[in-house]
Image (cartoon, rainbow, N blue to C red; front, side, top):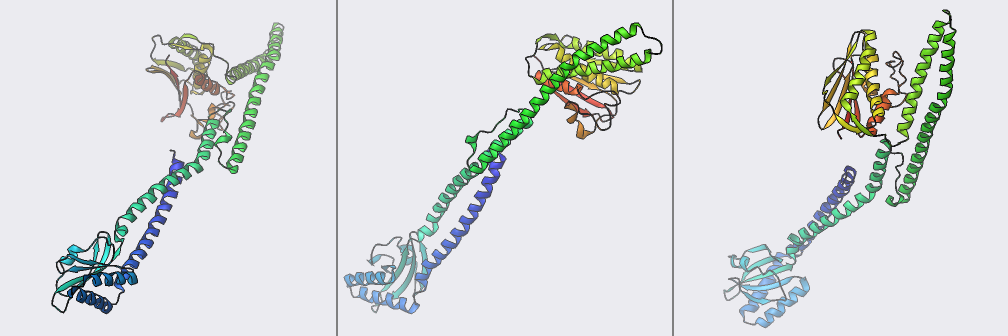
Length: 446
């Protein structure tokens, strides 16, 4: 049961409980007062006359007339009547009674009168003395007082159980389509564009329309993303041919170049190399987006990282910097696509080298436990915390121009992220406390 179900259930349940408690309190209060009223509103003088009359009839020994008198009183007053001896024994009964107040009667002395709550009934007792001097106890009662104390508790308990079940079913009925829509929304946000909500989960016309709108939105979103992926793939492939022709023409031009043309040709070559790198990234990204099967093989991951660090260290020397590998250096074998893993690690390391200040040191830490972890740390300007997750998206560039200064186009980290996810891994970015960006790449050990 999720939190939404619990919240809806508690609101309905507490509301129902309050209504039940207030209704029960008012009902049983009025019912109790009604029972008491039928006994206590009898005029004391009339009650005394009834008691004295019955006692005098019993004193004469005419028990048949005593029983008849008690039944007539019971019929007229709708009360149960009984005549007891001074010791509490039953002498005559005016009909079926329940919960005879024998104990209360045995404790009465003098000419007192009392009201007694006795199991099964509520009784009003009066002790009278006949003309012979013999004492009797006349009692009027109302059957059912026990229900005021016991039965209502049971009824309230049953009401609470029924209310709890009803509220739980109602809460589930209301929250089930919302929970289904929430699950689908999370899956869609996680990148599963094939996510749809099933109409069978809807329980009303409103939720069916909402589900239909969600499915239409997911359909259009999936279509847009697929079109974007196809566009990237088409562009990257179409650029290969003209780029190859440009490089060929550049090579021919260098054969006949003059000193005046050399700077221009160098500029053309640098731009061509950058475009070639961009196209290569686009091709890699399109392969990852197409969910093509990985070309898996057995890889010594430590050797792969070492080779990447050596190449990056050679590049860093041009700016008096260096790249240092720490941690595990012994062979670490795993199954994976060597080219994709190399791109994933190399993009992060080269990105760190580009942003490392001149003369600085990039640290690459390889740790092997239950998983393989590569941590790359530079000492550059870092990235605003609010944009750490965004820079893993293709073509995203930090507003502070972290990538512009280095010539990046915003694809390296996106490729690293997707390549690691394709291998069942993950990537995490954080700003170091003393400056710089720290990128942690994790892969399952296979």
